[in-house]
Length: 282
Image 1 (tube, rainbow, N blue to C red):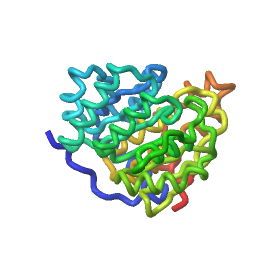
Image 2: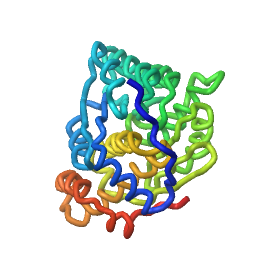
Image 3: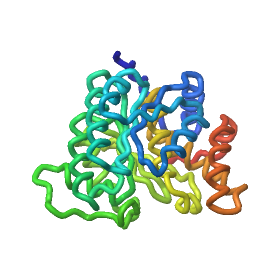
Image 4: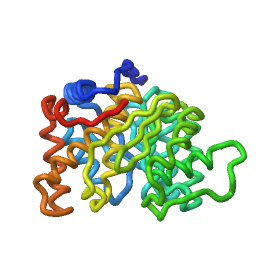
């Protein structure tokens, strides 16, 4: 099965983000996710709340067949094992063959050798989008470059040791080399196709106190890939999770209730809210 590629869509205004959300809810895309065991429930519920259909199919014996049937694929390197790596490779290769758009989240790449090797190998299967924190993007760009150095600037496990703007040049280079749209998450998210840079200002500081919200952004980018081109999908996925985080923080008493309120906020997002509050600078 070959998945039809979404038409190019302008990413730069709140109205564009609203259009993507409407398309997503109308189509209800099937999103194949091989993701971090710590956040499987969180990302599955976020996809359901926004209007997509998640499927957490990870076994190597099933991953290739399912990736060919899905509307989009999400690969998150968070909890790495040899078996999960086999499933990731099988799914990514199948997605490339079948035309299923996919997004990679290079969790802790640069900090640990095995996952770094897996991430670089996955790039050969041409993801349409990559999302990570600044340290992950710096490391992935260095490791995937010709004549890559043995040592790279790594983060502190899954946490970034760098601000988003420090990885902007690396993100541009990585986008040009791989053909993927690259997102650097931070207080302001930076999204680039190598030429354009789009900034997304939505979000709330309390979101950094809940595990998996970066992974949730990747999952929502995956859902948007089913209905929008990679640049629009990357921008709008960041807008959706960031704005939901803002709305959740207005009701939450702390990180625990923020997580619950964020799911409700994703479910309630509508045109009016996006038009009034989406912060996109093109």
